[in-house]
Length: 172
Image (cartoon, rainbow, N blue to C red; front, top):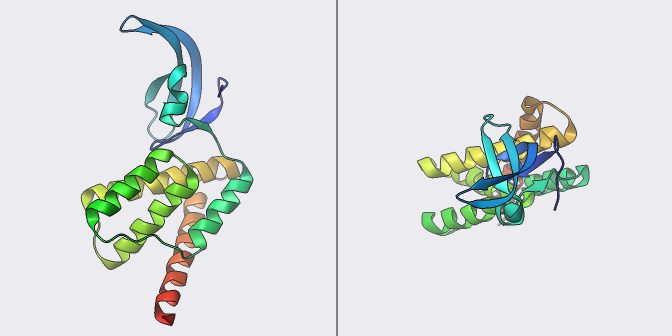
């Protein structure tokens, strides 16, 4: 997949980034084309070899229709649960690495449910924050709203999911 200079893209686990330049370069004697990205979350810069774009999961911002699907997933009350912390962490880490909104939404819902019952570990708190920021930043850029409003929308959807989950548990 080819991206253009100035295009906003999603770098899994880091969120929305901007392609600042594309140029040939040599690192450790290997000549190749590099995409120079600026991560919008912290203004840091990353170089990704063109040959590795698929490997790292770099992708274009999703279309508005996918954002609607994301909110459907966030609100639906279906939340994956795991028996133990290690299994949960591994599953969530694998989902985060995909960089796909619906997978990251599942992580966010799972960790939100766990945090409603007990404190998250330090690593899970960090994962929760990354998942939330990842979703909020893409929603904000796709919908062309500020991140504060995007976060409010995500929070409302999460609350809806938690309420549906609790209603389902009480019904059983």
